[in-house]
Image (cartoon, rainbow, N blue to C red; front, side, top):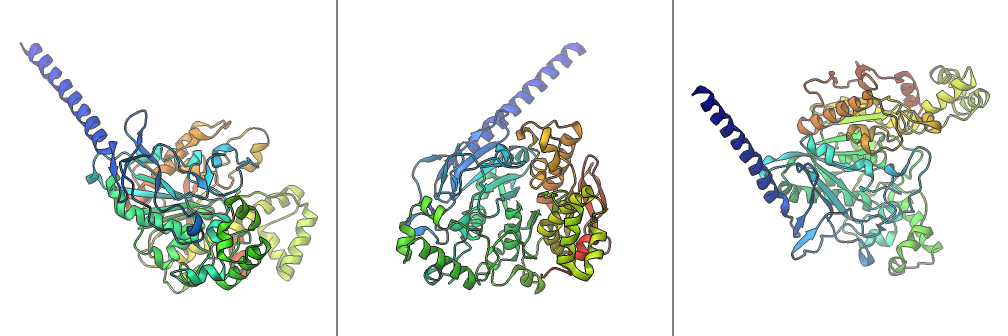
Length: 523
């Protein structure tokens, strides 16, 4: 009799579990089949395991074309019916993506579509109901402010959504479309400024998130902005900008800030940027805004070609970022800041040439410089060049931000150094822990990288890094169960998390060299 009762009880348990699972699937499907945004209804695509739905190509602003070219993003027009959001929107207008150095196709935008009509974002969510209120992770891509887009394979948001965040990736205008300044554009604008349209796009996307993310099961009060390279510099600008106040609660900056002038990017006053804009317009034969806006996107791309980046426009950025931080006027949020062990490489000079360059650049301080960046052999000189390029371009600006941030009460900063030399074959081995290498690790997206002989240690590192990032998005603190302790950074201890085959908290690698460079660099 007891056996029979046990079988019946077991059968009831199985049926109950099946019913609950079925109810979860049905309820989740009903919740996410169609989502209402402030402009209309959207539908997405569920993944193969049924636990994440992706909405790709949601417009967050009107197409910035025609008379809206070089204007702040405008509200998107409402639509009737259900907009099918099952594919990425066009990437911003830029040159055709061509693989170079270590950057194979998975690091680049798709070849098509590329268009001036580019203000779209993407959402991945595993929320069951609106009441879930999951924290939100917003990804801002790099590309030197002249290229890039949210449709790169390594930016896929499914893996992070599975870990309990609503993942959002956004597009913003780049190149001349995103950062051209001109006195006539300044005159017609609401903020009496021009040149930072790409940053205004990012702010518009964050405002869209505030209005709409609850419908996807996200929490508008718990939004983390994150970016890499130019995306990291964008994060730095958003933390500095009064226009972004209240739009996010924490920030992650991977390889870059604008607290120190970056030699690779334009960094100008509004007046200087306007003068450059006038010269470019005249060279293009455009004597008025109407003529500038009448040019095709391809003509603008070709005729206005130069390096672009954020400017001190008096509106988005009222002052240089360094001055905003020095006056403690920035948005006060917890921050993760870091950079990679090798970044851009660049070791080509012989020991003799490297030492001559040191004498030219540092004069009486050359021997001190060579103590931190030695050149006793050609091989050592090449390694020192790699470290110098890393420090001057990416590490130094991050180091300065970390030092400033650590002095601010209630705004903790956690610093990392990504040291893992990414497994590779052939000539790719030389790039080591290259610029952008950490992104597929921290998003747990190694599966998208081609021809990489990953070891179990790499998959464990990806699992570990993504856990830290998700914890930070959830709580403002990366630490959690089963993870090595990542201490808050301060200038007294200089402890950072070094990510490698075995990760641990260590003294900041290369600190003495960074201190020397910081003492010789104009802030």
